[in-house]
Image 1 (spheres, rainbow, N blue to C red):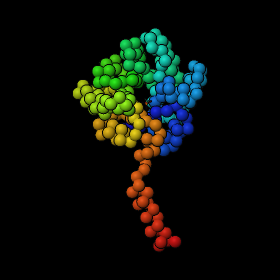
Image 2 (image 1 turned 180 degrees about the horizontal axis):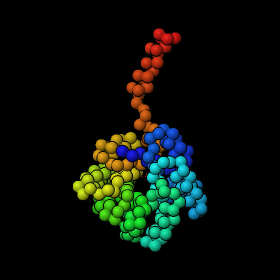
Image 3 (image 1 turned 120 degrees about the vertical axis):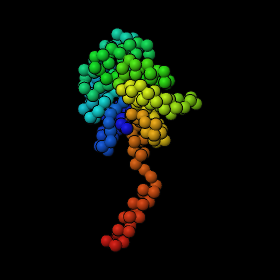
Image 4 (image 1 turned 90 degrees about the horizontal axis):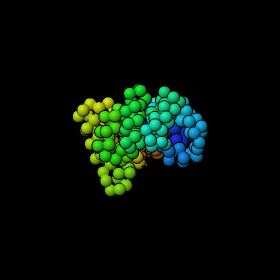
Length: 218
Ligand code: G3P
């Protein structure tokens, strides 16, 4: 399973890189805004910085919602760095653009997936990744994990190469369930990745080992 970090924060990305378990990065316009990145030049420069930090795919989202605009923005993003994956919303013109990008060999991540049908459509258009939003489905009382299971099963039934990138992953049980269900990728905040380190019995066991060692060795 690949671990992506869902942030545009360079410090968090660097910390995840240093842990040695990071496979890529996802961003979105909200995450870019949270870092105060504004204006096309600054946005492009920021994506480039992220790409230089990480040896893996970096999803950069288009703002346009019309076919020509999505293609124009996506091509400019893809030219920035080979790590860039053009993130495209699940809308009619987005699906058309994913087909265009796929035919040109440009990697895509179809975002804002909330149903198995949307995922199937994106896969048929040639998306590299689909991003079902687990947490946001849970927020409205739906079952985010059921969607992951449906998409994993459907893609496996037909051998679609599109990867299931579980997004809006908010906590450790989300991540573990995605792993159990066979999602190809999870993207989550740094706190969820580092949260995997901890168990009270690990802390207690280590303290005992060190204390026993000190008793004999001083
Ligand atoms: O990758 C999508 C993600 O950023 C959405 O997460 O927690 O805002 O639903 P969240």
